[in-house]
Image (cartoon, rainbow, N blue to C red; front, side):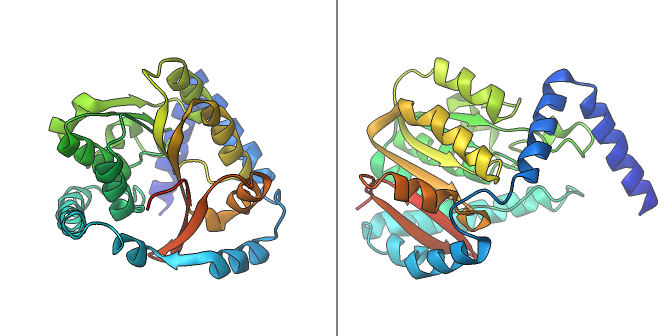
Length: 262
């Protein structure tokens, strides 16, 4: 245990030697100190989510039956593929997110431009890229910040993404505050789908939405994972009554969705 703690501190100090990385690390620490921000308390937020939530499986059943079957087959195949890779890595690289939702929406709406924050092992990235490849069109722009407590953390980013899919992928690794302005400045067109799954703090979500919103297409879809962490999603949809939104429960967590999908 002591040896592992020493390695963690060594890796953290190594990351802190990088000016780009230390700026993001400090920003993350400061945002964690401001966790209480939001209109609802954590308990109030969870009660609100519970009152609004639908089961994700019920939503998926409303899509075309062939697309449902394709989605189920992909999710099972991808889970097996990812678990085989991750079983050989002695670190926890995070969970899988709303894989079925991402896949079915990309296949149905054929987005030309997809932006995501939060890559980690690459569950969402691999899902989106597989669906784009199946569509035969589209490009994914991803923002991530490697797990700085791990040795050479960049090697683990997107580790479950199949190499043959990466031609449709632009990956940025300096954290949302650096990555998103760069991505927004170089987009080929408006964003059709935005998936947020990075910094779970209130301020982190707020920064990303303010950076991305001017670049969203008219009928864009926004997906925000883990909205039980704070009341940002509640506050956003309350402050923007013109948007269409819904909340879904999936594998013990809540996913917020903005836009029309049916």
